[in-house]
Every structure is written in C-alpha cells, then in structure tokens.
Amino acid sequence: MQSKRASFYESLFNTFSGFFISLALAYFVFPLFGMPKSMESSFWIVMIFTVSSIGRNYLIRRVFNFLHVKKERK
Image: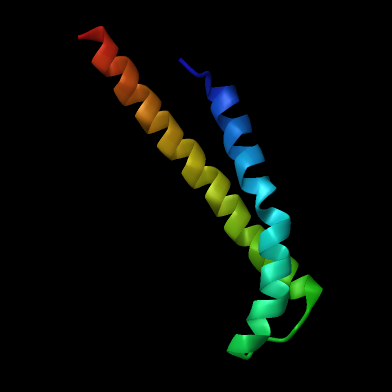
C-alpha cells in the first residue's frame, strides 16, 4: 500500500512534470483566444490549474488506495 506522503509526492511530481509544457502552450495558445501574450498571466493561470490538479490527483489516489485496501480485507 502506498503511504499518503508517497501519494502526495507522486501527484506533485506527476503534475509538475507537465507544468513547463503547459506554460509554454499557454503562452502561445492564449493569444488565439484573445488573451494577451504575457508570460506572467500564463504563469498564474497555469499555476492555478496545477494546484487544482495536485489536489485532484491526490484525492483520486487516496480513494483508489482505500478501495483497494477495503477489497483486500474481505
């Protein structure tokens, strides 16, 4: 079974591995939708999505871990 800390670190590294790709994409894609081409605004928008992604990944991992342990106890 994976510990809560290990789940958090896995989620963190998984999410940040895509952070820089998302940042680059945001910088070039946002202007296509009328948003200004600004590294600062791209950074903060990507950061908001990154933090929400870390939380989402962590919660999903913990739910699946709980269901797996519950299944093994039967």
